[in-house]
Length: 425
Image (tube, rainbow, N blue to C red; front, side):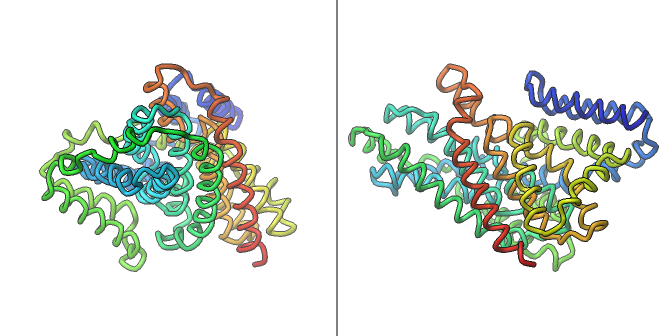
């Protein structure tokens, strides 16, 4: 009975998430609370909340959101964006190529949604000033953020989940994933330049107007900027050393947030609007739902089925990569990873699969999540900003038409990378 009930809640929840008529955070959180209040699983009690909600992930998210919000208030990100425009000196290929690189770099150390919110306004300004179609520019920003965020433990929500579940450190993510991210970004930049930028024609007078923007008025306070950047850099250094220091990632992020608030004079009420509460409660709901599936034995059943492909590592890794990518592309990378984590743990502990499979899961989820509008939160946020700017609805097919080939290309390269790097172990 408990298994049927949990599966029913799971199916209905994911159906509602895919439809997108209701807020994903509300759907996921309500589903989790339904399982808790139904009392069909003994461990689902408030006193045991730490067993089914990963507060290392939640703390990491909240801490980084606070730090980024304080840094954003200084005008730093706008300053970087305008600097990119000036450095390009009217060369469109250099301009948009630089934006892809800068977006990917920032996305590796910020969450993807924040990166989109920070850099979308300047790209929309550029498209309006140059009379360009903004859709390819915003969609390119989304894909660059998703690809770049794959490189680090904190860059993409699936990686935050994987880092907490696997125990892998900050440097391990960079060491394992940066090479494939660099390759994919290079290929994606060449593809975007040839297919879109090479066909653009603009008047040089309009480009000169953008390059004459006054950068001195963008930074609100140099003193606050220095404080915020110092704290941010200290957090990154602490992430690199957190395994040696024996601190969890959440402890580092929350400690950094505390220092940033003390130095800036801002309190929680000042920053409440900058914390993405929908994301936080979406994660909490998914944790509860995932634990319910584990408690009634569903994840063990799935892991046993997948384990049958473990005749060799290449076959198993390829199966996990494409299964995660295809399913995650439609229902979302975060929900899929949340469900896959206990399956991967069972494959490692029970069936003896090498721990390299964590990196396969990361590549499949982060790259595959770029495929559709519903695959990642950054995709939906970027599309929503575009709709607001263009004052018209952007269909599921329009995003898919832009993102499908780059996503497929990234997964092919990811599959080759996995075979070469991990297949022979």
